[in-house]
Image (cartoon, rainbow, N blue to C red):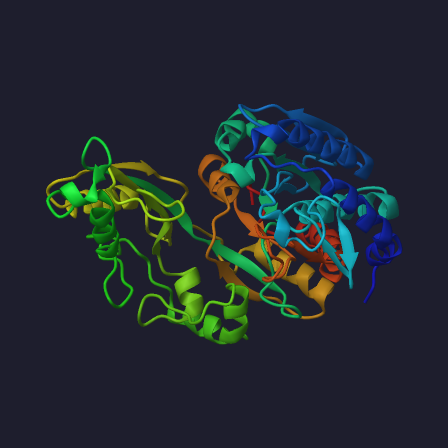
Length: 464
């Protein structure tokens, strides 16, 4: 049944789209120093939109890198408080030649908005801004207190976010955080994400001779660093797809039988998944687990990049002086990023053959995060999703990581609910990123309803 909020959102949806298009015109690429001015311009644009929506306090927060935006509207200290998190920076648009329309010249085709940042994450930030506007324009006030922190460095590693959270802790504290930087399970299948994997990273450097050597004069008589690295990398998995690093699985909390039954009941289609995976010919991974389980509840070790020696046109007959690799591990509940990173680094150094030197650099990354499915805020979000989509959401997890969610849990002791409305095939981080405008419209209505549901949910206040 439509409410006054729904009616307002439907009436103004065309304007909501036009405003999002203007936000997507700004090339706020945080990883590229050449776009620092654009990221700052994007922060100013978000701040102005927050004021227009009705936030009473709006500040641009400087960091050691790109600026963030803080906003709040405090109605009554006795009411629950929700903290919105999102990011206004975007991924680089390369390769440009694969875009059907320019990435920063947004275009609507067949009800879908194509632009870099359309869904990740400007479109989903805009859902929150418009939901606040809808409450204030129809009812005159929000049913709870709302704070908002919109980051400017998420797509380049959130290097300064922890420091920002610690510095602004008093202003950021809330009863629950709400993040819309995820997607639903499938078109017509609304979902709530209740878990994120953690992350650990390891850089590997293998060095041999002091310079590249002539392969005819030295090849076969000295250890080739590229070959040594290939052998080290190959040793990190067995033939069943399990990670061979000693202790890697020791702390893993396996999913319950109920969790596995819930995953099995989801309408997962392997062929559709393979299309979304860039036309991969087959699924693969740790034996004994389904594709969804491999993505959501099992840890992984992936080689993100490997290089060394000559890679230009033609041939250059050398034994390279050095070779390198970047590795990341996705972690599940029970695993600690620092411990896993050091386990992997130790295994890599231990696998080094005589004749080369292997050094490793570790980055602990973030811990995995789980929100209990029976948490009052999750139940409130489920009711809001059912209102917006016409059916109850399924509960899922994500194979990815959202650093802010881990930061809120670790630094503020705050629970986060993830209420994203993108779709799995929205091409985030890839050419032709897009946002289905029906999902966008539903998302605004879901978030507007969420404020009502959280306002009456018992158990989300810290003192209850």
